[in-house]
View 1 (cartoon, rainbow, N blue to C red):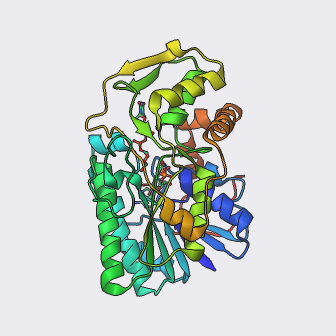
View 2: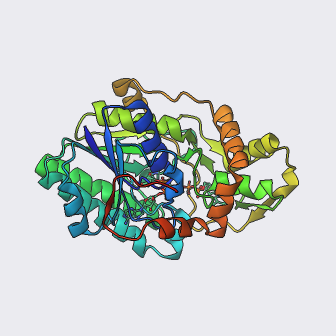
Length: 345
Ligand code: NAD
Ligand code: DAU
């Protein structure tokens, strides 16, 4: 089965490709990624030499480039590529509209033209907006996004559903809660807090820190994506979650305890404008239909993530200094070229 993964050089995408290469030997993977600031080929350095993997440097919103990539023929598409950081969408929403909305339209149109058998669209719990206390949203909840990021993802979902309805494109939408784990770019809360704490720098907590997120280990989510590719019902929307929201302060205190660092590092700073108070999803539909459930407890997954960041200090430092950008510039120059045997050396 030939599978096109978009955004494979990012956090979830690189973990997904590693999992697919290790656990799905029938899959051949093409990774299409524009290598924005969030794309880092170092994330895949250990698997890039696999004969079942190739990388294509392209923009999902570039219809001509995407059409050329699709000439290879794919049975499945896992569409992850996106602008993903809420704070950045508050500074400049334009790249979010281009990549998340136009890019999704380009991708699903290409999938339609080529008769792709499965198109898994990676959405987010943020499309529902903030959940009331003690309630969780199922797939029938109204779409009510708060940030430009969330609005761009919600728009993409609606486009995908329109292609399902009008053209019978066999698309599946996954809406997942916050992921954490190895290779997460240190602008996101968990790796940012770990990186700062490791250097005894202040941990910037937005507002009162009582906003809640339902964290799921990235490996558990990648298994969910694989399950959706194999057995998801076309046309369906599925929520994916661990099912236990925690406040940011609770997470940060756990992190500090695991790192052996003092709570005095916590600094309350100005809140994020429009900050969603609580995300909580009911994922019963996905669990029952696909037989999926998360394997890692939060405490164990978080301890492993702390340890990963500690023992990959060079990776973290190269992300923070920007040095990782020179990596692909040195090794890779021809945009649009397919690199079948791209290596780090
Ligand atoms: P990320 O920011 O770590 O990586 C995004 C990747 O997409 C990068 O490799 C980047 O280079 C690539 N990309 C960006 N614009 C592109 C373009 N125009 N063309 C091709 N590639 C482009 O993101 P992530 O956290 O791994 O998230 C992946 C997907 O999962 C996104 O769709 C996101 O909305 C969704 N999601 C993420 C989370 C989370 O907690 N991280 C939770 C739910 C859903
Ligand atoms: O819920 C899924 C979403 O999770 C994904 O769709 C997004 O792509 C992903 O970025 C993430 O969005 P969040 O805004 O929830 O994640 P972030 O890591 O930016 O923030 C998590 C919480 O921590 C949030 O309540 C804001 C808070 N925070 C974040 C940062 C970066 C802080 O208090 N301080 C910080 O410095």
